[in-house]
Each structure stands twice: as structure tokens, then as C-alpha cells.
Length: 182
Image (cartoon, rainbow, N blue to C red; front, side):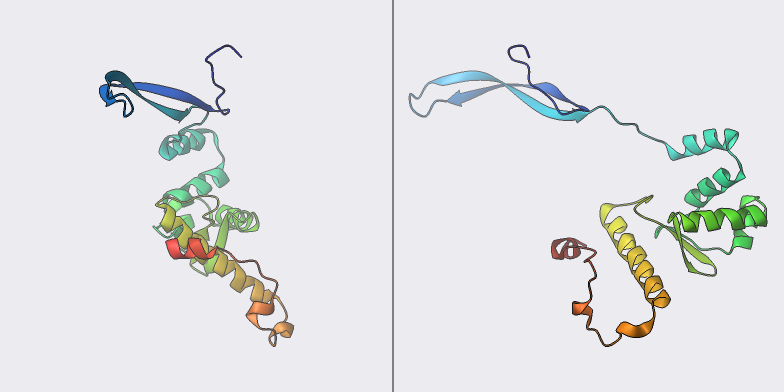
């Protein structure tokens, strides 16, 4: 590398901004000197901004009905990452056949994109997609994982009822610091 050049992490660059000049006093000699003040910050450049509506419209033109339904679900989520509708309501409102809605919803459930809350409500996995604040996402993620835990308990035989929760080999979902932050 040439003299004076610094290596940057892949996907970042340095942005140098001249702020102006400032007078500084040398504490040892008492001399006053003018210095040029600059700000140096790392900037990301190897990423893509995606405007969901534009992407949806483009894929809508070339995609099939299942893709259209997946994007329709994303557009119709509430603030808790939920779609509160029966499959028949989804079919009626999206204009997609009930059969396609049913097969697509099953595929999205099997792929862990969606989780069924009850007969008329679904939650999109916040690890995959979430619109909102970081704390909002953590809250929905906690609820989503609690729902998953509840489903697993319903599927497991009740042979471990005498085991205390602290004795089970269950990983913690969040550290104590993360829980305090929420």
C-alpha cells in the first residue's frame, strides 16, 4: 500500500469533511496556533436500499399468484407484524383464489415465514421482515418465539411436568440486558 493510504473494511469508505479552522493553545508553550478541523467517518457503500412498493409492483408484473400473495400479506400487516384474516377473507380481499391462498399459506407456514396464531390470524416472522422500531421488533420477536415455544409444548408429551423450568435445557431468548432495554 502506498504511503498515507489506509485500508477500509470491505463495503465502507472514509468520508472526510472539512469543518473549518480553530485556534488551539499549546499548554506547554502557551503558543496559539490555527488548525484545520476535519471530520472523518466510515460510510457504507456496498448495500442496496429497497423501496418495498416499487419492488412489489415490479415483481407483481412478472411474478405468479403465490408471489403476489406473499407481497399482499406484507403490505397488509398490522403494527404487530400480524395479518388478522381468515384464508377466505385473504382470498376475497387479495383477489387470489382460495386454493392458491391455502397452498401458499401452507408453504409460508412450513418455511417459517408465517406462524398461525389462531384460525383467523397469522404473524410474519420478525427475523424475516419487520417494519418499525428496534424495540418494537424485539417485542414482536419475543411474542413470536413465545408462540413457537407454546406450539412445541403442545406437541411434546407431558412427561416433563415434574421438571422445574430452571432444570430444563432451554436456551435463553434474550440476555438480561436486552430484556431491560425493552
